Amino acid sequence: MFDSKCTSYKNQENPDICLTSAFTSTILKLTYGMNISEDNDSDYVRVSELVLAAFAEAGHPGSFLVDSFPSMKFIPAWLPGAGWKRKANYWRKLGEYFSHAPWDAVKEQLV
Image 1 (cartoon, rainbow, N blue to C red):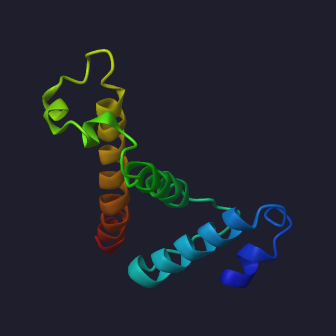
Image 2 (cartoon, rainbow, N blue to C red; image 1 turned 135 degrees about the vertical axis):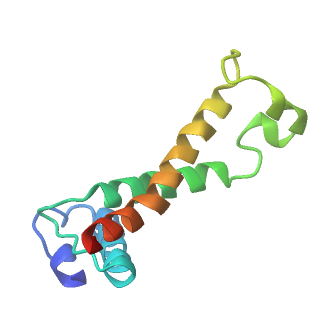
């Protein structure tokens, strides 16, 4: 599984994509029994990359003003300047999808 991802002609130019998709497909195979092939580039691989990027951005201390002023968490999301809150809601939905979708797919296969 790992070798087929990294030797493909599609991913030779960008080893980061190669390794990310290889690790994601290996984890999904071991955890859920899903076969993710390069030809069938799964939503799970794309969403995992988005979730990883969200963790990297949100985990950087001081990347959002709400880190310095915790009372800002009570500002409504529609207010101008609260783009961080809309971004956090989007990231929450991605995280929920990434944690629930593979499990739901396995449950559907069993039924």
